[in-house]
Image 1 (cartoon, one colour):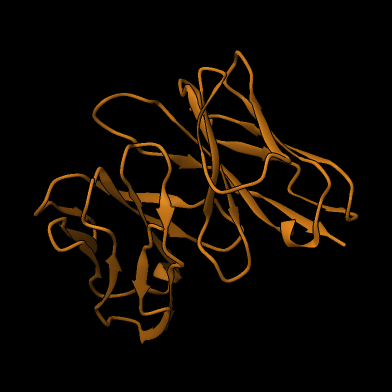
Image 2: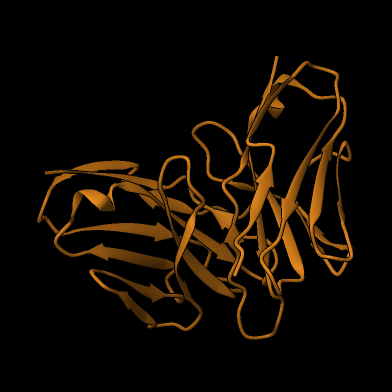
Length: 114
Length: 111
């Protein structure tokens, strides 16, 4: 069973640029959630995708957008980068059903905005 | 605004000590409480998912309890080992979508 993978591991961008982060979900999972962990904070929910549709969004501006593909992999896009976007971005995959909601995390992408 | 509080923020124990951490969460519209173990440069590892009031889970030397009526969960580690050194995160969900995380408890175990 392949776990959740994310790419790239880390990257550096300049304020105002755009960035795309990628996530491959665990085999058999149909749901992907994205989280942002700023320094000294717990991970914060950005949004979730279920079967290619957005299924819940946290308190993040529209310049944070996402996609989920038919193979259930996902992208997180951030436009007009700001210095405060510097953080670890985690994705988590899960199999959505009525009885459990365990989310399995990837190792994250470290984004630095200068 | 939903808030999850974890305490202590960090602690340092000696090998063989037993320890416990606290997670406080909103008691309304409870769906599930998750505990994760997170080592530096690795993926957060799921320890437990608890859904029922009074639930108790155990995995080796680590166990957890849940009180949904008063909104708290305890994580216990018996006989701490250096390999237990990590950040322990708890997360709460209401409708099974977003996980709302605390800031974590960072445990350091000295041999």
